[in-house]
Length: 107
Image (cartoon, rainbow, N blue to C red; front, side):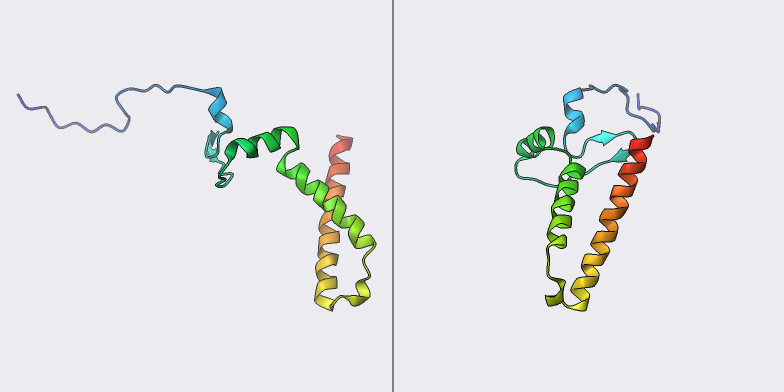
């Protein structure tokens, strides 16, 4: 006897194995959003850097701190107007980051 026509919007088996260690792998599903951390030839090294050195935000913050110091000691007289504008924009962004961090520390 032939099977009757049937439409299914869900798979027949509704189960999923959950491995908590896989949550931090590139491309893992976080809630409703997919976070793609990009391709890296050594994800194990990338993960170790994040765990032992710091998050991407922390690493960028340190780089910003260093750039602030270097800009303080830079002879801007040798720069073009466009280059000075670029530094001014960066200083403004770094100041905004400091402002947000200071505000967050109070709460």
